[in-house]
Amino acid sequence: MDLHKHPQQQDRTPQAAELRASDADRDRIADLLREALAEGRLTPDEHAERVEGVLAAKTVGELEVFVRDLPAGRQPRPHAPAPNRPMMPVPLPPDPDDNVVAVFSAAVRKGRWRVGRRIHVYAVFGNVEIDLSEALFNHQQVVIKAYSVFGNVEVRVPENVSLRGTGGGVLGNFEVASLDAEDPQAPAVYVDGWAVLGNIEARPKRGKLVADIMDRVQRSVDRGLRGRTDR
Image 1 (cartoon, rainbow, N blue to C red):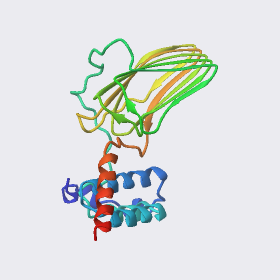
Image 2 (cartoon, helix red, strand yellow):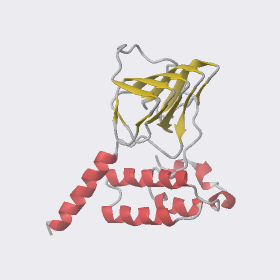
Image 3 (cartoon, one colour):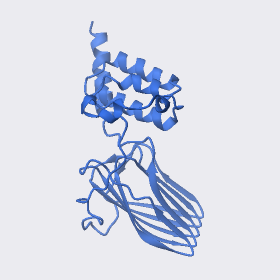
Image 4 (cartoon, rainbow, N blue to C red):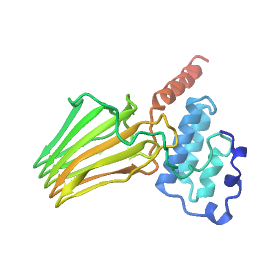
């Protein structure tokens, strides 16, 4: 989408541009650069040079210089409600694709892993962390059914997916930060369950986006390297 179609971006005050950049700001710009590399808008050398500059940038204004000439170089708008998105998932098979169990222990799912349609989570006097911020989504809808008894369950999702929750707590805490993705075709994560004298929490991981483009990025880098060696 062309920057010139977003006048609010051009009206940004100097004070906003002078704000100190956060790690989430740097992650967002790095994701845009990876997309540009995958689309062929940047060469591998240009991508590496800009990423190095992103890591060294101190302010928001300095970061935006590196994506100013890219179509996606704009600040994400606040997530607007998507009225056509279902509040509950479509019927899914009752059997889970993955069971994550922590009994007097800890269990973690994170990094680059493929998410099934249904995940069952059990934390009994234990801790479970489900981090989808770098996961590969093969399905548009994912259901996480969580049970916490004197335990703790934490779910983290990229900020460009939809997040919904239906559950409760018995002398415990069940908290889901609802989120609507701008793209109606973006994955939707539904967290359900009960916390009995325990905690279940789901929220977006700011600065993290669905990263399925990484395979394309790697292929682009490999082509660039092969082009050098063939000379």
